[in-house]
Length: 102
Image 1 (cartoon, helix red, strand yellow):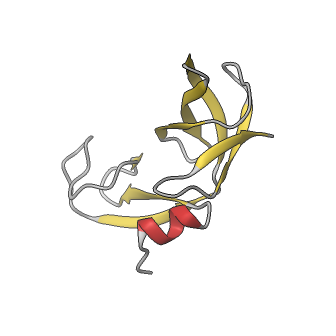
Image 2 (tube, rainbow, N blue to C red):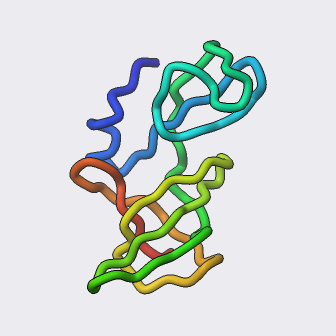
């Protein structure tokens, strides 16, 4: 399956890479696994659901590190007031998904 991350983001989907050598899931897209440096990589689609790992509010915007159910973390904007541990889900964004509270 060939995925275009920009298209998937606009559809509210979160592409990530899975290393076939060590089993590590990670985001952002790169050419080798950050854990084992393997190149046996497959692009997968996340459910887009996860938990808030960290949250920051700055000048009226809410930013969070979201730990997705597939085990990787990503930094993104959040539409709702959230706290650490809250469940969130991805919704379409222009260049990356944004998250809302579930």
